[in-house]
Length: 91
View 1 (cartoon, rainbow, N blue to C red):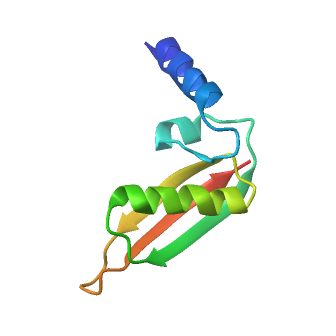
View 2: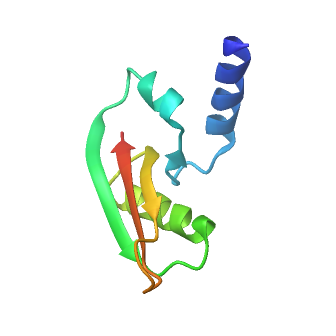
């Protein structure tokens, strides 16, 4: 089962757009030994959907030269509509 997961992740990575940062889950992030952490990015913006927030994270990660990102936090703290998002980024 573990091998199947790695095969699917590898296939996804090969099919993904070469210029777009790829979102990964925490399990994959923990097992990626051959990547370099570039730090954490933070976004505080009025997003209509979670998908818009994920797209913004991916674009910001691209701007920082990252190949992968792992969303750490995504929440709407108040009634003002702004969503706070943070993610680890990796090269």
